Image 1 (cartoon, one colour):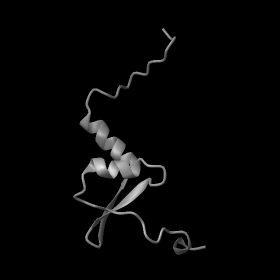
Image 2 (cartoon, helix red, strand yellow):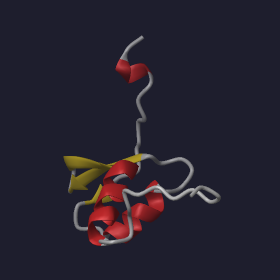
Image 3 (cartoon, rainbow, N blue to C red):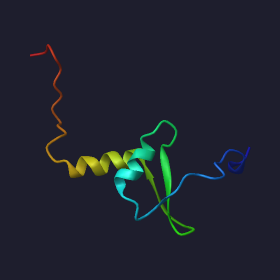
Image 4 (cartoon, one colour):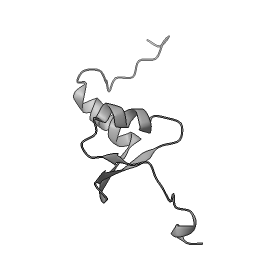
Length: 74
């Protein structure tokens, strides 16, 4: 079996100037996990769910914590 046998022939793509919020809506849906980013017909990169989570974590300081709090534990 070859890669061409399983690849997605017409993937959903986004332009590199698309607002991250719009791309996030696509990526957080049930079927899209990673999106090719294009400039015209040229592939310039990929954006994934992980990329979005990391970007949001960097822009919302103080929201994430390294201390894990579990209810009922002292």
